[in-house]
Length: 195
Image (cartoon, one colour):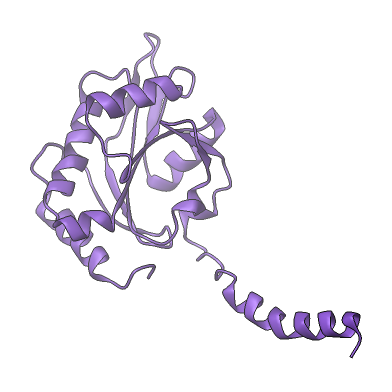
């Protein structure tokens, strides 16, 4: 057999395996279908589909907020504290800024540092204004900019499954988590990894 035929034969053997390794298509109701590029508190770019594979707790906030947004962080921390260490390791937490004009990498990193948010689990992110509108619509978050630079916005924690589908949501804020929402998070984390 010539070297060219050997390469072709090997390619024919490998192609079915490569096709099987390709990830399955996302469900039609997945927010991971959004193609916007985000960047995190370290300046690393990502898309939402990069978070595929484990449940996510998602909320929207902005770093200069002094009242409600710190409560959103406290609420996510409350859920996190209600989990075992093993459960915590299986949950990602994503906070997306409503204020991309002011929330640059440094602002996101400052909040993450001040609030002692573990970067292994917590991602504070920004995207362009059009992307903010798209993800807010998919998460059911209403917001509007005010003349003084603040934002009027709904406050919610949204639980996504490993494929980016909304499983549950709560608007209960504070360090003591909504019991029904915490139960939904625990149920999502009890499922098989990536499923």
